[in-house]
Length: 253
Image (tube, rainbow, N blue to C red):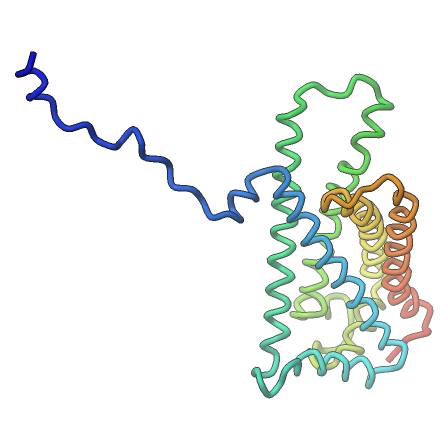
């Protein structure tokens, strides 16, 4: 017996070793709660962007000099501390990152919800009440994403700005580029439709934002609805006014 015990090798600590934990933020993001926080935080950032982007574009009503000067001001953010245009591109990179995280969190939550509820809603009424927001957010989000791609190709890179229009794309001539783009009726119609989709997305997003962040006290539901409605309305009315003003001849070159 003693010989058998002597021949046994030393007991290793393999059994006591634990799997290396992921960083806290990644570990949190792997949960539904973490994904909701990401949805909420990125939603706040993107809501702030679309609001201030719309407000800045109101310079269009002051004429070409005002809008072009505003665009030049954005390029010179923190200049000469930072090279011209660097801060603007860093902001764009941050926005793209928020969009990617927002989309991924939304997709991941959808997958988690499907796994948690494999059985469909039993009645059409229950399905409508419980799923209308998520279904509309998915489709309006796709429309908005397609519009953002077009918007960048049109007014940032100029790839499609002159398609079906007269003139040459000069990035510094922001006012002229905007007018030339919206003079094309299909582009203006697409812009209007996309902003209506954006409004629906913003309304549901602003409403559910409070729930995602844990701020959904039932006493504030009326205030939440008013905020969501007001915010979405201001952004949509402001953005839709631009193509309408160009088509109506109020804004022209």
